[in-house]
Length: 334
Image 1 (spheres, rainbow, N blue to C red):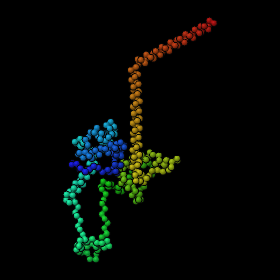
Image 2 (image 1 turned 180 degrees about the horizontal axis):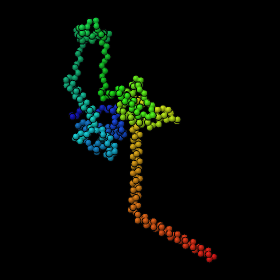
Image 3 (image 1 turned 90 degrees about the horizontal axis):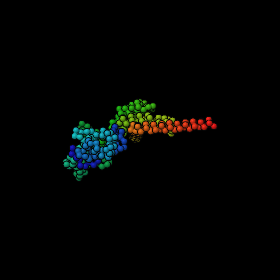
């Protein structure tokens, strides 16, 4: 694929980034490394491709080769491999292809002279192209089968350009029903959502699904809320002792993304805590093993020292017994 010379940037699809199955599981460090790799791939030649080399990917991601062995596999999962030993991100390559196609189309139109020039109207003597004044009514000519009196006023609304396909997402009744089913299945101890629901409530949930269409992300946050005291009637001592997290509350704009980040932070803390505990256990095991090795290496010295201590204690005991006998003899003589 030929390099497009004027592509210093690539589109950043925010919804896909926040709700993606890969990025939603990444730490801040991994997200930064992934962005760095996407940037290098965008400027590479061939475009959107990098050499599948762990050391190279670690350097380009600015994570470090030793650190890459721990955090790199999740980033590497976001790239597909080619038969030539290169990797590419499928979504990024699709965006690149779309930009090249649009650029080529515009260049072709430019070579043909661009858009057709507008016809000059309201020239003297030209009644057919005359623009009516603001107060005049435009009368459309009907087919010959219609009567002359059958006319209508042209009040058409201006055409609206539809949003790009990448920004559209299906949030129809099926997805809303799927979200409600997921909530009623995973959320404990409730409250459950009853069906059918009012149209306004369905519109609210449909908007939330357009913002975050990934049901796996909803499932993660719902399960996390099940274990949080504040979301399950925390009781006395709290500002809202009887409050429970509801689906309408979670569907508020930005709310799911906020708690998705809290889920990620909790998972990161648990992982770090587990790693710390494993590291401490490994250190204690190593110290114990080192102590055993030292005892094995100095077994004879330890045995000799123990015999010397026993002999010394026996000698001291004998001396004390002798002194006691002398004292008894003196007492008997006197």
